[in-house]
Length: 429
Image 1 (cartoon, helix red, strand yellow):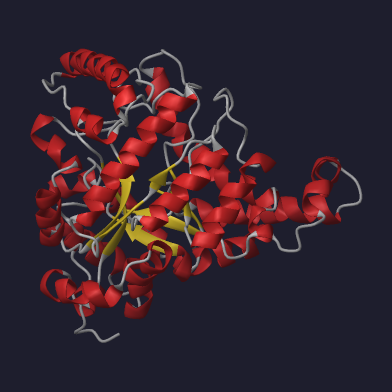
Image 2: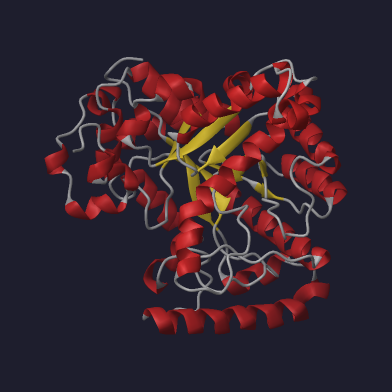
C-alpha cells in the first residue's frame, strides 16, 4: 500500500435496529396481539427508567441506547450513512441494538435482557429483526453486512434461518448468543449445537459473539448489580472461545471463523498463555487435577489453543487503544478487525479521524490496512474494490494515519471513547 492511498475503513462493530412499533410489520399476523401487549410493556418500562434518569423518550433505544434526539441513529439509514462517511467510515458490520419483539424486558437500560424459555415467541421476534435487517442492508448493500440472530432453543430452526440469510444477502454470519448458568439453554460446548457449527462452516459464515450477550442475571441489587455487570461482562464474552476450543469445534471445523467483538484485545495474550498451559498439563501431565479433569477433552485435540486462535479466531477490536495496537504481533495482525461501535456512547464517532491517527500512528501501513479493511472484508464478505471510490472521498490516507497526531490536540469531549482516554495511551503515566 502507498502512503497516498486511502484506507478503506470498515467498522467491524456497529449497531442498529428497528423502532419499537416498526417491528410489528415484520411479524406474522398471528403474533400481532401479543406484540401489542409486549410493546406497551416496553413503553412503560422505558417511561419508568427515563423518569429516573431524567429522559423523556419511550422510543426503542435498546440496552445502552441513546436519548430521544439520537434514538433514530438505530434505524435512520440516510443519517447513519451521512454521519459515518463524515467520520471516515465507509462500511459497517451491523449488530442488533434495539429490543426485538418478545425479548425479556431488562430491569434497566444498562443491563442485558433477562433470559427466557418462551421459545416460539422469542424466535419469532428474532426472525422479525432479521427481516428488518435484510431491508436495512438492501438500502446500502455494499456498505453493510448484518449478523443473523438465532435461537439456541431451536437448533433445527436456526439452521433454516441461516440458510434463509444466505439467500437474502445477509452475509454477516451468525450472532452467537450466550448460554450462561441459569439461562435454561445447554452450554455452548454441548453436542446439540453441532449442526450450527457445520452450517456456518458450509455457508462461510463467521460465528461472532458480542460482549454483553452471555451474561447471567445479576439481580435487583442496584447499584452494585450494574457495577458487577461492568466488571464481568467481558469475561462472560471471552468464555465462548474456550468453550468452542476445548469441545473440539475448531478441530472438527477447521474453516470456521470465530470472532469475539467488543471484549477488548489485551486479554488475548495472557489468556492464550494460560490456556496453552492448561492444555499442556491436561494432555501431557502424568498426575494432578488438570490431567484428571482435562485429559479426555484434550486427547483428541492435536493443536494448542494458541494455534486454533491464530488459525480461526479473531477480535472485533472496538475503539482499539494504542496500548492494544502495540500487542498486534502477539494477538495476530490477521486476527484483529477494528470497530467504531457507532452509535454507542463510547464509540469513536465523531472523532474517528483522531482515534485512527492516535492508535495507528507510526505503525506499518500494510499492517494497519489488515486491521482496518481486509480482516473485516474477509470475515464479513465486503467487496473492497467496490468500496474504494467511497474511501477515496471520505477516508484518511495511509500517510495521514501513519503520521499520527499530537494527543494534546485531541478535544476533551473525544475522550468518551476508551481509545482516546488518557490512561490508554502508549506513554500514559
